[in-house]
Image (cartoon, rainbow over all chains, first blue to last red; front, top):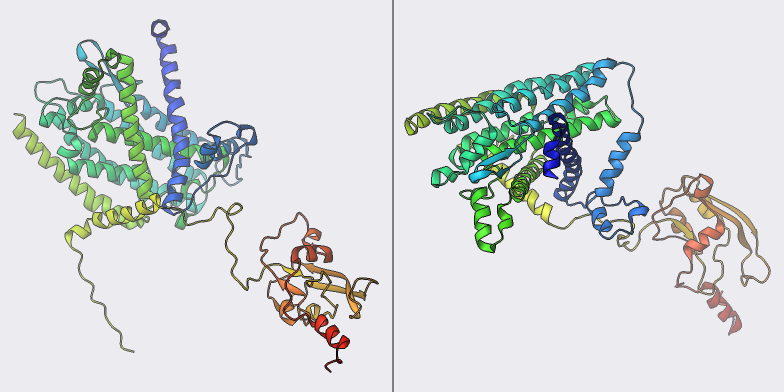
Length: 387
Length: 180
């Protein structure tokens, strides 16, 4: 089957791969909205949505468990969004109002293409990353495209022609500018470190993981341990960039009704949220790749070593098969992403929203100086360590 | 009263990083996340109704299965939202309640008006109307939300009678003489 796939024209191959990735990311993004409701409910000592069960599916064994987990509710919600009336208020700018959810979706799914979500071992144990577009500018492409996502919020806020969405849009833009800087500055030490003198310069995310899978104490350490300040600043900025509590300024149900999406309903509204969760998935994946060792299960235990170990332990050669390695790496990275998303939700339902001035103060007066100091310190350290 | 100025301690550096508090809060929410739900899954699980609960007003029968209401209309007059409407009538022959003059021909309680105050139960001289345990009323129309006499007896059932007023009186008549 692989030969058949490889025999197809490149464009068809790319289309199939893209559809496969979207077919994974879209349901995960949708499932996250249900996970959000369940985590919220459990944290508030409630059972959460657990009622919906279409009678025609009731006979399936295990349907009851899915019912308790709210899976049918998720499908009912999704179906409702597709079929309910699309409100188009009279006072909005029709073109931009309709365009905004699309503008939200496009960057969210474009960033997915450059994120390597796994790797397999090629000839001679060479790690080949699995990504739709394994471009060398990796992280730069993610930052460049992800920051376009805020245009959708600004566009939605402006096109809604209503005061609260407008305020939400203004806040979104201010927040993005404030945290994008610290985020990029926090990542720079990682790339300073991996671009050792004498090697070809790269911004590829796969190379970062490769660097974290090297043998030895310093080689195998995840960047979370060697660069905790960078990881912290990146994590906080990630919360702000994905508009998650405690930084959900653009939305702020309490003071802005619904913020930028106040005037939206039905499928357009749900697109904003699928985009938000897709952004979260990509953000978590980038965090996992940069600081949590990517597809290495444990620190100081790279994927290749893990599979070798399993091979020795069980004696099965199947562990060394490239497809097994690829699936294992995807599973490990997805596991890390899901854990990170759970932490996102856990924090969301724990801490209250910051005030707008607190968000600005934290961004400009705390995180930015911290990330600059961190960058200077690591630059000096790296210059001394890698002469 | 003198104003007491609370001296606030300056936050330490660690506290100002916000992280110890964040960790403490996340620990608290984690306990709730793993702990049991505090809520009740309503239609399957029902709350325990405490004694003296004022639910839907109902009409009750005495232990002999006889109608207790004598159609005095005190409840109708006391009802603050005017939810009760009684049409008095004569006692049907052979109903076993020949000792009373009247019985309700119709007894309607409009549950859309009822405020569950319990004054009807309080005022009833015959202990014929009780606010019992039922708390959930639903219907598809306004007329469905009016409880008629048969429905009221169905909801009320029979309650133990502490006084046996008529039995005592009858026994006294049959014996040495009425206790007047």
